Image (cartoon, rainbow, N blue to C red; front, side):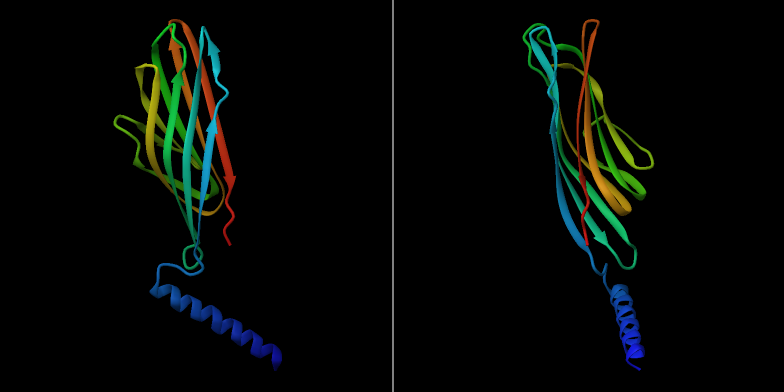
Length: 182
């Protein structure tokens, strides 16, 4: 009799949670923001260096019942720069940012990424590719959205390529965090 009472209480609890979830957005939701930051050591050329860095907040909201979906929002800035004086400008600068979610059925959409930025996504990552420019530095602001089931980790990387005449310098930096939501 005691065992049946425990089972019926458990069953009543589950039924109550399902009823509550039908009237609200979620039950047992968790939320956490992960700070992803990195700066490369840089690549030396002539009298300066090419380097890249980023500062990104990855906000993860987990809804358990009824959907078991994580909503992830990557927001931040990425930068690259040439610190030398000769040559003063790079003939061409290209830069891309890649956002990764390790989880089941990840999908991505672009919130904002600057004028002319290209956006592509695959099974667990999305890439923003910015137009080539002539100059000394590149700065971007972005918002990339993702959904996934039970995300394990979030990551970001920035890659930049500077062209000086016939010399090409490519540099990158990356950071990742494990997602811990109960």
